[in-house]
Image (cartoon, rainbow, N blue to C red; front, side, top):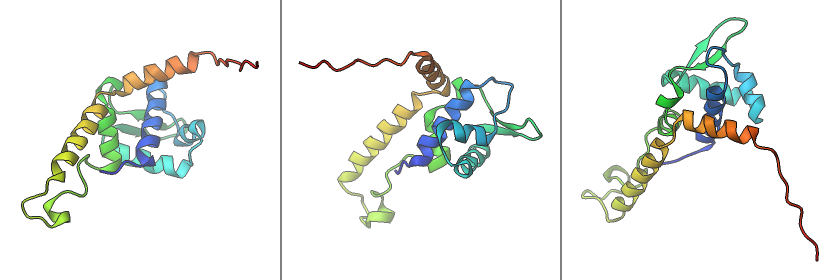
Length: 148
């Protein structure tokens, strides 16, 4: 189980798409610039997400990307697995550790992988988009330090 910047950036990109008007495609470059990400990297992420059926591409002068399904139907787990592969232990398996009957640590990693899967499955793009919209509307506040 490995989570990388691909998951984080991919999820941020999809949150931005979920916050955008549902009928207006958003260009990959615009998505990249809004988060300060390299455009080529965002294009790679979107290509993988398109292959996974999470986004769809619209061609033409006003083209770009749209979510392929409702934001309420897309979970963070689906996004992470589309970009990283299945959430499962990467070390403890008979193929990698060489113990034919497994090892005691495998139950630890299986439980951790299950907890990560459950946590990611609990977040939909709809929920994250609502939270982002709330954060974007929140006024910036600063509490000055008191000096004594």
